[in-house]
Image (cartoon, rainbow, N blue to C red; front, side, top):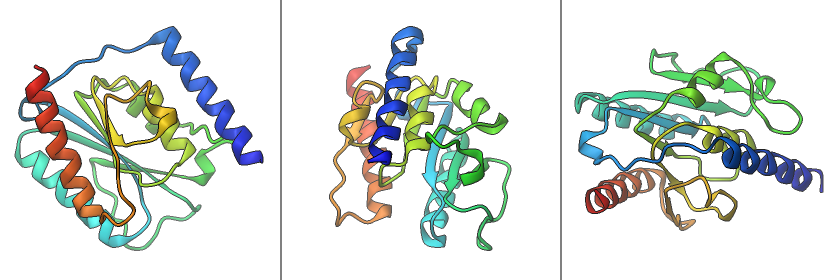
Length: 182
């Protein structure tokens, strides 16, 4: 019950801010995108390595990539190695409603990424907040009904789809979608 109330309040806030401030939507061909933001949940080493590989590939393509992840505990895991392009926040950076705070989060939200990719696989209120408040021109990620207003491309992710396939499918769809809509 409390989780439902927290979710409702946080999404009410996102909707209100979205209506008041809006954002400038833009469709950039994925090949021409200069800046890419990535949201993720830091939960295990294999998924983190897949995302790290994605960042390396995008960087090789000349893109400025910044990642922001949530670790659902207070102490970072041993497999996580701090890197310049990756910021992590923890439970201690999130208030009781699920709203994250801190300079790292504010900077990420305010950065006008060409494309913002959400690779969270489940509903995570702090990540929904960041996604909803982001000034990114194009937002893509997993389908969820309460984020339709703020997302530009949503992908239905079957439960049996592995994480690597989810990443590749998202990139493929963005490439197709932005090429055809330009």
